[in-house]
Each structure stands twice: as structure tokens, then as C-alpha cells.
Length: 539
Image (cartoon, rainbow, N blue to C red; front, side, top):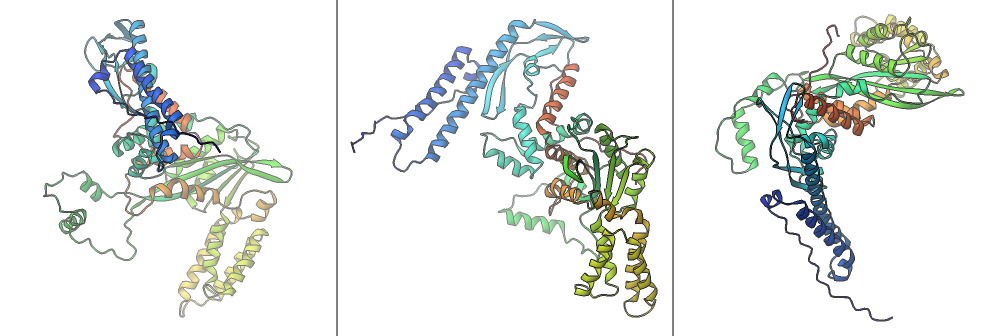
């Protein structure tokens, strides 16, 4: 094999970035030269790295160097594009123009820092100032869709999307693995709150699914999220006292506990969670193919701290948008966990007159849980006899023979003395199960539902609650403010529905349109969360 002599080439891959002042004064020619230099370094690294590397350098070392150069190319290209766009805008825009009744005068270009996927860049853009005084705007920002937040909309959107899946601190850390300058946790939180102002409008505007099935399934359930009490909010918002810095974090915690004093021991049954209910609505369709109903198709999730009535208002609106509105002859199945309030609102919003083919169903698992509890009146908990008895009742339920289950429970109740060891508890369990079944007897025809291949359980909404709400908002130590948690939860719903990119583009366009009409800069970040849905008459 012939000897191959490796060429000795010394790579000079370091690009010395100009100072901010120098970058502000760059002409388009100088910016183009900067971009050419960065691109030349990329070509040089690609062609000669393998020939000049040391014996201990690996591909991962090449990737690190290439990534830094690609970011430099991105920064140089972005600055060149913005400089060219500003030059074009200054040529075409008059020095004085009007929007509505307000007249603006163009100022000389001013420098600005702007954080992008490639890092922080510098560029100049002109500022339009009202002739009569007041807040103005930058025409170039409106034309290019830039915000007054000094951060790329794509970077803000990605950070907010991560923040719907993990804590704000974790979101910033993960984003920092991929971008040179990740936004701070405060910026991420303010971006989430800013996007949260547009979620309610999006759920009304979101595109209607195509190729829906013939049966609409609506599932509703609730989940409590830990919220901060008034006393906790007072501590958060109160003026911080001055104290000497602690020697270390563990001593700081010790000092704070000493100052705070001992917390009173909770009594049996007391809860520290202070949970507030979030209502979850899951809608999807089933498509008939022979004797089967295939699905779920076009599943959509929606969650809100609004009252139960608000959840039904959304469900009815979604049904109408998808072609299952009032007067439809299509099948609409509503499934709940048996909550009496949900049944009350089902009759109000999906009544039998407007929805003649409606099917109202109680989740079979909740019914079986009641039977497991009632069976303990005769059989020892965990025994084979108890399991066998529940299996018999389950077969009766799936055979549309719930009345037989009720008859047996009534016989047990009659045979259980009112006095004696444990009899009070046994009678209470039996009475609860009998009352539960009696009030829902028309909603437990599981044999008929299965024959029609309809749903008999609420597993879809239970899973959505765990994935959308609990996974992000229900961890140890969390104490949310409802309005702020609402923004996170609704953005998470939009992401789960597969609408994230469409929603962000729609929300930013809506924000820019409003800002332009008012002659102000468009800014997404805010410290003020959107209001919760307000329903006058709710459970």
C-alpha cells in the first residue's frame, strides 16, 4: 500500500467579532465581507479538518467547531439582510406619513441588539415618532414581523413551547443546549402569559377537522391543580427584609426556617394542596366501517379553570363547528364520571329534543369501583370471593342487567342488621352504591353500547388529564396562581392538538395588527395574565 503523506495545513478558524460600536457603523459592503469571511471558514473547516486534526480529535470535536462557525454565518447573514432591508425601506418610505389621524416623522436609524437562533446580532432601523408626541414604532419591524421584545419570534415561541412541558428553569436550560443565548426564565414566563391572551380566540378560530366520522364522542372530567393561598401570595408579594447573606445555601435555608418558625401540624383530613379544579374536555369522532366504529379521529383537547358550565359551552360550540349541532340526526355520545352536575348540564346543553340520537354514558370503571366498595359489606377486602362477586356484577352490567345488580344490593341491605360490629359501615356502603346506581340506571346500558361499538369508559379524558395537566402542573411544592396556570394549560392543549405553529403565526399576526392600528410597537411579553372565563350561573 503506498504511503500517503498528510498535508500540513494550519487552520485559522477564529473569527474576531467586531465590537458593538463597529458593527453599528458597518456598511452593507462590510457586512457582506464579514459574511464571506465566515462562509470561507466553514469551507476551510469542511475541506481540511480531517487532514489537519490531531490523533485524539474526533468527529464530535469537528461538530463543535462547525456549530460555532454556522452560528457566526447565521449572525452575519441576519445582520446583512436587516441592513439591506433597512436601506430599502429608507429609500421607499417618505420622511413623513400618517396612520389614521396620527402623523409620524422618520428619525435617523438607531442601533439595536436582537437575540436570534444564532446569537445576539446588531442592526440599525429607523424609528417613526408621532409629530404631536407619544410612543412611536419601527416600520421595518412591522414589515418583517419583528417584535419589541428584542428576541426572535421563533426563539420566543420555542422557549414558550418547552415551558408548557417542563418548568421555566428547565426550559431555559434545555434551550441553552441548542442556542448560544437562551432567554431568561422571566422572559419565558412573560411570553407564555402573552400567548395566553390569545388562546381563547384561537379555540374559536382553530381550523375545523376534515374527514370527520359519523359519531361524535365528548368526554368531560376535572382535575385539581395546587394553587397558592392568600397568605402565601402575601409572602411572595411582600417587601423583602434586608438580611446578611448566608455562608451557603444550606445555611440560608436554615436561617429562613428559623425566621419563619414552626408550621402548625395539620389535622387529619387537612389538605395543603388548596386544589382548584380544571375542567378537561376531549372531543373526537368515530367512523363507521361495517359493524365497527373506527377511531379516535381528529381528537381535540381543551382545559380551563372556568366552571363546569363553561366546559359544556365549549363542548357544544365544538360540536356545532364539526357538524354535530342542534337538530343533528347523528349520534353524539357524552361520557362522564357520574358527577350529578355534569348530568345536569348534559340535559341543558345536549338535551334529547335537540339531539335525538344522543347517548349519555357513565364511565364503567367508576361504577365498578362502587361495586368493589359495596362488596366489602359481605366479603373481606382482597379476597377471591369479593373478586368473584364483582366479576358476576360486571357480566350483568355488560348484559344490560343493572337491575339485577340493584336487586342483590337491596337484599344485602335488608339482611344487614342496623346494629352490630361494623354494620353501620356496611349499610352505608350498600346505601351509597344503591343510590348511585338508581340515579344513573339509564346511563349504564353497557351491553347496548358495546353492541353499537360505542365507548363505555373515559380513558381518553383520564389520559389527557394526566398528560396535559398533571404532568406539568401537579408536582410537589408547586403553588400556582390560577390565571397563570391557565395560560400554561391552554397552550399545552394547543400543542397536543397539533396546532402550535399555526397558533403562534395567528397570534403574532393578531398582535401586530392591533399594534399597528394603535401606532405602537408590537410586544408579546407581559406580566398580566388573561382573565379566566366568567360564567354567571355555574356549579
